[in-house]
Length: 127
Image (tube, rainbow, N blue to C red; front, side, top):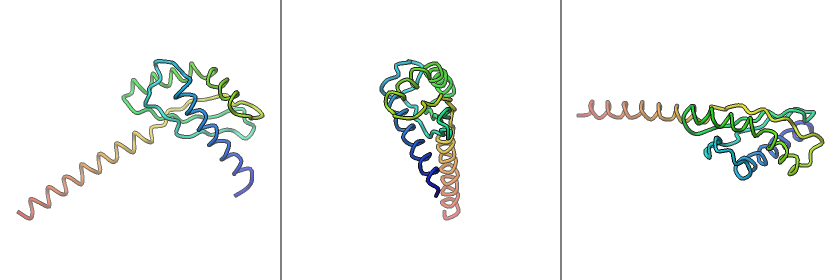
């Protein structure tokens, strides 16, 4: 792995960790769900932009409200990020909804339903 890749991976992970802490403890916007998490962060090499992937556990309204709250709090969150991290530039934050966790939960439920049907069918065949 190249040195620049290691550095960008460390930067992404550190920004993700600090953003999660800021959103959890510093942001007081009531629209932001307490069940939101920062899944990952992709910071550009020049540290100008960061794409922040957010996962929200809840219905579509909770996801939409959380995203609106985060986008309106982006300046405040960026300011706190600048205070806590020593980066050459503090990246502009672009929040993106990440549905991968919800998708995983949905697929797990479907697999469980199919397995339950198979189990019932096997019991009926044995009887």
